Length: 203
Image 1 (cartoon, rainbow, N blue to C red):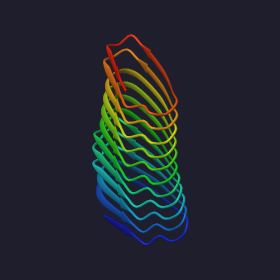
Image 2 (tube, rainbow, N blue to C red):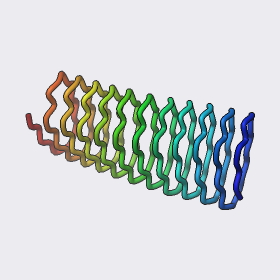
Image 3 (cartoon, rainbow, N blue to C red):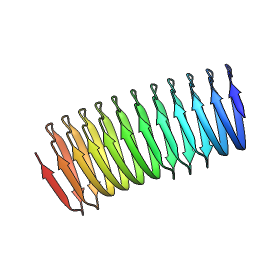
Image 4 (cartoon, one colour):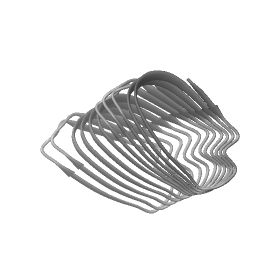
């Protein structure tokens, strides 16, 4: 199935198919279950709920609420303010240049290049965080993680992980519980609270 050019309010409920959604410029509520799916160019505010699929999200420039459960996923270029809730999948997040709230649970995840304020809540995953130049709130629970190059003020809460923190040049609040961690090069004022883990602090 292919859906294209729905410029007005669109409520889309799809179950058990292969689908490609493109160019939904208006308010769209998308509920999709059990399919392979590609979402591209949703410039308006859209609510997206997807369950049990392989999915690629690209170029959502407007405010979007995305809820995805149980599959592999790639998110790229969300330039507007977006709320992303993802559960139980393998995921790659790249190039989120604006304010985005990301909640991810039970997955392997890689975050790169979040240049603006970001609130990140992640639970039960293997994760690598790199190049978050803006102020970001990071809450992570039960994962293996690597943090690199967070130049802006960041609040980081991490529990039960293996983690590496590198190059946090601005004020950062870091709370980490129950795992092994390596902290390196925190040149700015930082509040670090770590409980019950093996730790290495450098520079």
